[in-house]
Image (tube, rainbow, N blue to C red):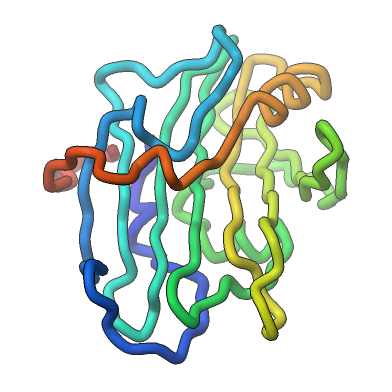
Length: 202
């Protein structure tokens, strides 16, 4: 389900050098229970056939990590990415439309795009844009984390999309408020190399 996500790279700017303990171009699987992306909703889970991923930027001048996790939700599915900036790096400020354009491979076949809007879920402002994909009603979302020090960017952000037979405001609210993002969950987590099988998404 997370087809070709990693090909689009990190939307970051940086001025830094290699840091001890940071492996560039790393693509690994980790136990979904150790993923920074978690949901407190009992109706939301990641099936065993799916993979939770961690990818680092390819160059030492871009210090950042992307975590990706697919979910099954009532009547559909969701794909969530959590992007964390590293040393002397920040995530460029973007709108949900910018993110959709940058990661257009995630939305192949999408149509009937609505107008982007900002909505508050549990006191946090999310940018949301609705669309239709393979007969399901969907919404792309973007939640920016804290501003990075001294620069016009963010230290982290969460984004992705959810699709369901009927993705109404109540379901979207229940889903987005259930997510937590905590990179410390993945500290010292065992990992194994991730390779995309030919002709398949992940």
